[in-house]
Image 1 (cartoon, one colour):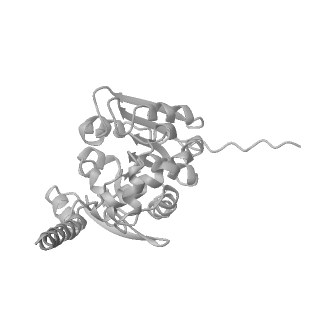
Image 2 (tube, one colour; image 1 turned 45 degrees about the horizontal axis):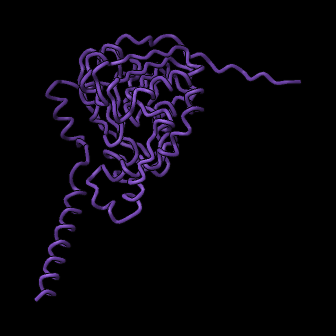
Image 3 (cartoon, rainbow, N blue to C red; image 1 turned 180 degrees about the vertical axis):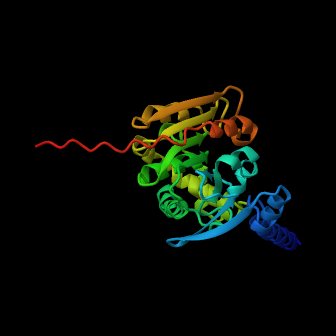
Length: 302
């Protein structure tokens, strides 16, 4: 009798676990299909295009809103988890559309860019760099990165001095190695069957955040290679990415032509949405014409 009850409990738990795994992988993907997005943009009379680009072994997905080849490019890079539609309000903003061709990218492993296949920071940067060269129209480029998109845009600027990126905007970016918490539980989730219980985009998010524990150590060197203008926007009540990350970045952007921090006293990590008007207005007032200061040649001894 006891054995029968134990078997029933085991079968019930197995069914529940299997059902959760199936459910978990079908939800919380944090993405919007191109067809649905196009219909939403058309309602506002905004041209919209979703595209794919083959970058080495990864297929990257990105979207464009009202791209005019005569305008500078405003390119958004989301955090973890996320996808291009994290910046949906910016792509639909009539004032921004007058000043920029606006693009938002699905980072590798998220949205429709090989969903579920997490990559480290360096690999992502190499593949997104190929996309940026493909997209560049010779006009100035402004890169905007939120959260884990912050170190990504820093790496992109550092690795691509040949691109006309003259403005970098970091929204609550993770940049200070000392602020990165160990979070040993992520390793348990990533390297055991427990990872299959993580819903949708949370699995690649956990995997890349685990890799970022090492990747963040590249930030001091990457920050020192940035030569364009940098705007850092940070909430003082951010518990995900503490405010110390902003001051750390400012201290290590030693070759940037200009660095400015905008503090939001009562804001947390979600400033792209809670402070939309402030961020939008800042993007509209950026200096898009001043060229980037070229790297100084190294002095060599005789």
